Length: 66
Image 1 (cartoon, rainbow, N blue to C red):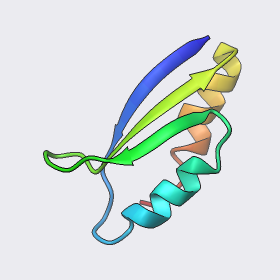
Image 2: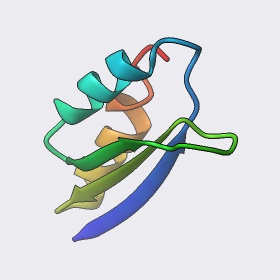
Image 3: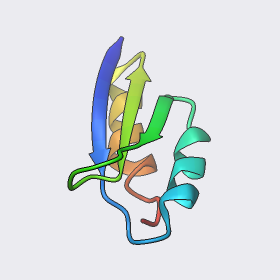
Image 4: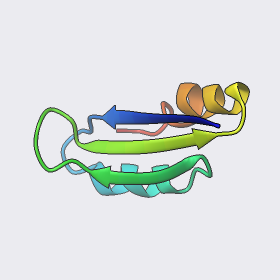
């Protein structure tokens, strides 16, 4: 099992939309707002294979408009 925590920045006002789309992905086990600092969202990703992990992090999450 591969596990990663990602820190994401969003454009103002898009955090709810980004959180909603992140939570639709099966490999995203948790996504929450960050209350302070340079990042807006922290995401926990778990995947069974490196291929699925790369797909989720390298494509699925990156395509979400933020």
